[in-house]
Each structure stands twice: as C-alpha cells, then as structure tokens.
Amino acid sequence: MSRFLIQIVARQMRVTAHLVWQEEGFARGASEEDLERLIAQRKDFASPHVHTDFVKCWIDGAPLPPHFTEAPLVDGQIDPSRIQISEEDLTAALVRYDREGVLLKMHCAGEGAIRTALNAIEKLRKTDGASMRPQEIAHCTFIHPDDRPRFAQLNVIAEFSPAIWHLKTPEFAVLDTGYTFATMHGLGTHMTVGSDWIITENPNLFPALQGMLERGSESVSLETALEMMTLSGARAVGLDHKIGTLAAGKSADFIILDRNLFEIPTDQVGDTKVLVTVFEGRIVYRDLEVVSCV
Image 1 (cartoon, helix red, strand yellow):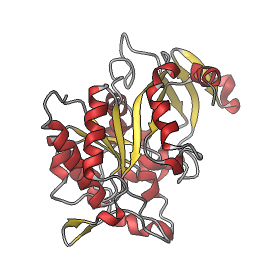
Image 2 (tube, rainbow, N blue to C red; image 1 turned 180 degrees about the horizontal axis):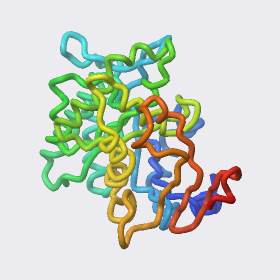
Image 3 (tube, helix red, strand yellow; image 1 turned 60 degrees about the vertical axis):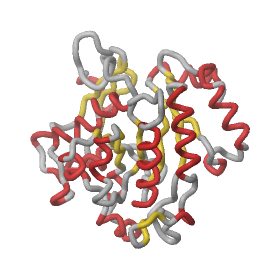
C-alpha cells in the first residue's frame, strides 16, 4: 500500500503498524534486505494516526493441525529445531530496537518459544543503558508454570488470542489446555487481546470476549476482559494518555452496541453487533438499519 493510501485509510482509524522483521514468508516475497529497509524508513510512513515504531517477528509456528509447528519444551528444555530466531539473535534485536525506541512484538505459541523470548528479554533488562519499556509476546497460547510470573517481573505484555479457542471446532481442540487468563491476571500480568485474524474468519473481537468469560477456572470477569480490550491495549502501544477510556482530554473514540453486555448471558456476548463507531468525535460507521435511531 502506498504512503498516500495509508494516510487516506487512517483518516477514519488509528493504526499501530508492526513492521515485519526476519520473516520473509509473511511479507509477500520481500527479501530480508527489503524488510530492514522498510523498518529503517518507518518514520516516512508515520502520521498522527499511523504509528510505526513497532516491529513483529515469529519465534515459532502454530499449534494447529496438521503440522503443529509451535515450539514446546521437551523434558523441560527448549527444542531448538522449532525455534525460528535464536535466543542470541533475538537478544541482539531487542537491544537494538530498545535503543531506537521501537517495541518488538514476538509471536510465541509454544512453551519453548515463550521461554526463549523471556530469556532474551531478561538479558535485555540486564544490558547497560537498556530501558524498562514493555516488550510484548503475542498469542501466549501455552505458558509453562515456571515462566508465568516472569511476565510481570520483566514488564512483558501478554497478548492473547482467545477467539481461536472460542471457535471450539475439532481442529482447535488442542488449545483446550492453553490460555490461562485468570492465572496470568492474578500474577499481575499486563494482558491484552488480539483477534488473530486471518486465522479467524474476521477480526471481530466479541467472540474473543465471550471466550474469556467461558474458560472455566481460567475465566476472568467482564470488567477485566473489557479493560484488556481497551485501556490495556492502548497502554501496550503507549497511547493510553489519548485513547482506551472516555475521559476529558482524550480522543472521543467509542462504539455503540446492540446490547448491554452487563445484562445478557455470557453465551450471547459473541453475537454482539456494533451499531455506531465514533472516531475523534465523528461518526465513521453506522448500521443502516438503525440510522434513524442515531
């Protein structure tokens, strides 16, 4: 997408663009040199609505059939054959991006990948001149119990993708043992929510919200889940002074729903529809069937 088109699209939304690092397969044939060049030129694409000081990489694959390419722990040890970026290379990247003021989001599904990322972040924290700015691990599907407290200790954001679990189709049954929402929340972890679209059919987050409420002993309250989807997400990208809650001095960004989430059974949350979207005080979307009501 050209810079001009990016700015046109961003007139009606706020974009935090995580530029791809070291994963050519996710960049439509771009070479590693192309990706590095784009990251170096990221400021050229920035605007008040487009934030580009963010990078993403993949530490392992996905716990999905038929291949199950996540990186587990084997006899309590990291299986290096499943790790896409070594701990040493990841540590070097974290140090480099931290000095540049860039947040690196790391895709980690398996326990081994998460431990690799946490080990690298721990080494970053011990580096002379390193900041304590938050780092982020995406998906956090399976976290070994020994590693769960390390998120809060190292100021690491745990981004979950609960819509995947909530789909409840046979191919996702393996995820039933993952997504420890309540445990991680109880440990004081900074938690956010992602849709994991395009793995899910669409980026609608209401099925994900229902998933967090229907996790048995790992469920969280509606209030906690909503904060994860709003203020915690804003805090994760350093924009909580501007968005994430409705307050004096903040941007008037909000949605109007077709139901009161606090007055319905949890099994109806996933079917919630957005009637109106307001961005910076302007209506940028409305359901035509209710246009006369607004």
